[in-house]
Length: 326
Picture 1 (tube, one colour):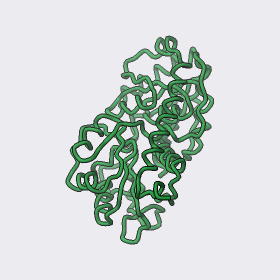
Picture 2 (tube, helix red, strand yellow; picture 1 turned 45 degrees about the horizontal axis):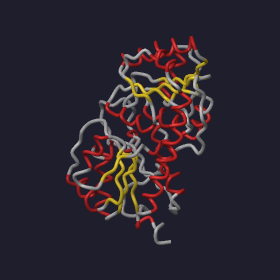
Picture 3 (tube, helix red, strand yellow; picture 1 turned 90 degrees about the horizontal axis):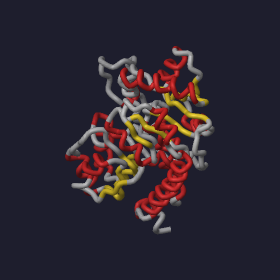
């Protein structure tokens, strides 16, 4: 995908759970990057890039080698031009589905196509927040569980009570679908300056525009276009502060506690990562200095083990995935 590495943390977590469950599979990606999978709208900021056959993901055509569909993480599982194309493909091919840790930012009522998929073709529905749970429950037996991004890294290590190094996830305010409000960006930068005056810190960018912001401000910053590099970028932190939900996700996967700044409806996902979720008016230094981060780290590691066991057991029980019959 290489658009939002947070989405790829989810992807890595899903594949980790599938492998541990003993599912044999060839992963085929439906690329939801809007630059390649959405019809052009002249209001958008990028040059026109028609969806082209050489792009290496499922084209949703009759000969695509797909026999099972997994939705994970993204709020776009319910609606929109990309989701509707996928829903039509699932119905046309009569494919079985699983929804793993999906969430929503706003209340949504599934349309007729999605309602049919949930009612007739879904083996497992795990919601990462109450909005997704409420949307699905009239149509399918739904349960709540953390987003699978918590499973994206193999090892989780306990952290000390007082952080030696704090990871500060930087986020700009001008990137389409990847920004925070300008007021939140300024709040983050002001809080980050205060934290940097008291602790050793490192700035981490998930997106190229965030790296550009860090360079503009003269802040040393870690970044990579490869999602698999982020385990190394976060690993030496003892605490992470982020407004990006999946900054808290990869932190939790490594056993690192986090503070998640809640600036939109997706922030509830952070509770499934053991994060402290707080609004963008919180003075963060007193919070950092009054919290037992060692205990939170231990709780997060236990949570990760529990989430992994839940997903593995649920996946093993799905007949269409072939584990139970082997």
